[in-house]
Length: 231
Ligand code: ADE
Image 1 (cartoon, helix red, strand yellow):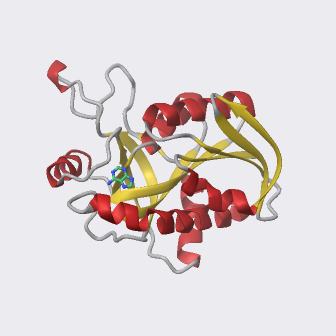
Image 2 (image 1 turned 120 degrees about the vertical axis):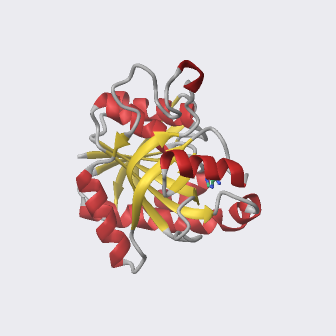
């Protein structure tokens, strides 16, 4: 099996890359795709930094599928907590993903609905979710799973957070997961999103983000490495 691993930023992949046995690298669209193995697993791994935001993430996913023939995609990174029970440093596993900034409500659609698609809520793969839950609980973290809301926006305004919470009821928000999910859905490729919480997506989230995102990225990377051995 070939597994694609996508992080948006250098800090989100560097910890995984350091532990990878890299056998080749290929640059496509200016992105470095690192091919190899991880954690003594027999799976082939393709690790890549997509860049930030939904378009970068979707393009990167399509390259992984078209050029590297991945059988599954794992998105790793950090996120802002929306669910009040979830704290900085916690790990969140996606059950599904939506694009909170997709809005044709002026034309009568519900916010987040992608007009003329059969769904706008992209479900994560049940097996990948189960593996992630086991790994998270094995290392002694609380297991949080739920919807992930993505948008091309760093959320730090409490009113924006409240809107996203009310409309989509997600556990956290970030900027790539639902785009990766959307691309995987169209290609019929299983995916899961694993995010470590760097901030609470409200007042002070910019300061907390700067303070905690590196540490959170290390935690998320650790989960991915353990997952690969269990898939
Ligand atoms: N990634 C980490 N924190 C975030 C936030 N508050 N909004 C969007 N993406 C994030």
